[in-house]
Length: 231
Image (cartoon, rainbow, N blue to C red):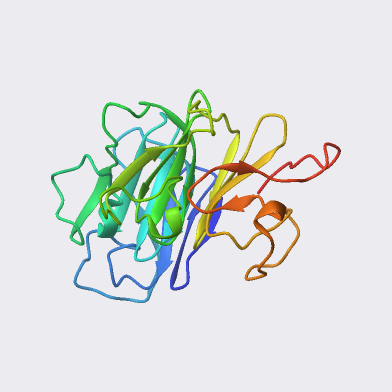
């Protein structure tokens, strides 16, 4: 598995070990060489004894990994509380090696998928529920900011009736997030410029003709036969 950000990349090899390369300006490549901006050739990032990585994702000056135990670890700069809003041990914006993400009592203890936007993260629990945290610009966490919050927020993705949506895969982009359900349906939330699963970014369209709704998860208008296999 491989993930590329604008200035660095990370990959999981066949031994389930993580290697990152590129700029280390935030400690996102080598979390223990915080005073060395790089760029670095591939460096191994250790998650701890007997932990195997199954997926890695990269963001803005930070990287995260999902383990076979369903844990999430992040390293780099903790801007927007990307180490988890429940982690009081790392000051916002600080760098502190590799840390397990803590999302609080409302979140699952086992995750099976993980996605990184530049400044937000989303993960799927064992039951398929989606959980997002970090910066909430464009309501990419699935709800409008509460009380002016814009960082360090956490949200469980719900439908219009307040029920938890179930996903098989999740993808986080610059200004939005999308998930694919077990039936192959696409739900998206965040900035409202993606339409019908086909239109290019930055194409303004009528609110009645778009699946990408600001602050609310909505299903796309793809035909039933157009089942989404992956995002």
